[in-house]
Length: 253
Image 1 (tube, rainbow, N blue to C red):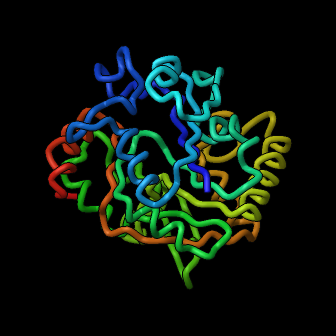
Image 2: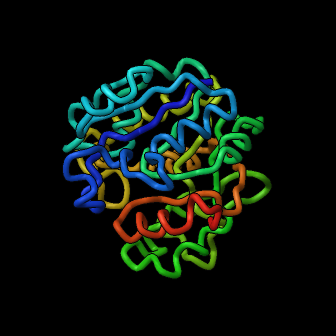
Image 3: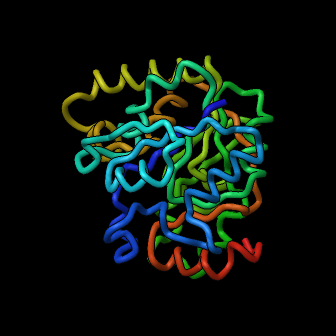
């Protein structure tokens, strides 16, 4: 099993922390964000780590020579979906992909590895616990999910808070068969939406990863889910960063 971490963007909402360093270098509990992810993978026997970098990639190369790097040279013009596919050559075998600006416990990876589905999303079912003081990133911006019968039925920011089962953590697992279907849908959508809007007013190059997932669900593909009741924090803003530094290392989340 391989881990693919997507971290090409600058993280401008976390300025000045990202003024001269990658976002994943921000420290929480004496460790960089990226180190918490690597440790979660290591504890589950996943030691083959690929990193898709862009902004300040040379600092990452110097700090983590053991990573298999892919360079998203167009990171200022694209978004997380297009960024992931700079590592398409690594998707011929099972993999877990992960955003780079998130904290999660090893149990999140353990749950995904135990899933028998070809495509599985990690869902935080206690997601609203973090939003009481998250005024800079309100719940209507969360990548929310609904589920039924063990499958994800929708993953979309527009899901009303009261209808959401939980929040997609940014971590997903694909078997080799699931990866093949992901690639097929990506290239079909890329060709179809080479010009104009893909979804929700966004071009394909600027699309979010969940927008492809939702398109796949609408086409009949099945995504399973594994749940975590907390044990996850997204660090998008300085407010999130402060919250994480107060609560993460102590086990308060």
